[in-house]
Length: 122
Ligand SMILES: Nc1ncnc2c1ncn2[C@@H]1O[C@H](COP(=O)(O)OP(=O)(O)O)[C@@H](O)[C@H]1O
Ligand SMILES: [Mg+2]
Image 1 (tube, rainbow, N blue to C red):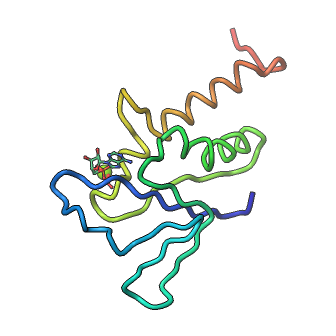
Image 2 (cartoon, rainbow, N blue to C red):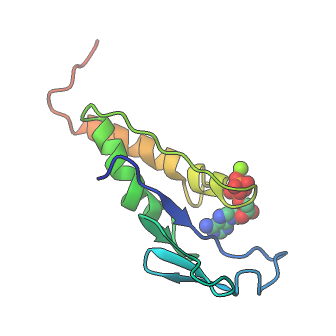
């Protein structure tokens, strides 16, 4: 994995948002294009569409970082975006759909529990 990975996640429109709000924006693989602006195509390491799930995002981009931290490498995962873009949904999630933070903690404890040579303090 490269030192820095940039992923974009598009969320579904909210009921209060006009249905044509993103009509000019199209996803193609890892790129997002705007039909209204010539040559406006932006390519990222990952693009997750409106059907993506927190666990899908976790598996694709966060899990490898969590695993490498337990192998001794520093790692940071953060969400950046304007208000209401979906940061809290992605990072915290809900009881129904746990977010990256919860999934990362699960992964850490899973790895520790499978580590046969771990130090047990009594
Ligand atoms: N991927 C998603 N699928 C469904 N609803 C989402 C998604 N991302 C965000 N939302 C909803 O959009 C609204 C704004 O998201 P939120 O995570 O609170 O944004 P932020 O933290 O960036 O301000 C919330 O009602 C949230 O439930
Ligand atoms: Mg928030």
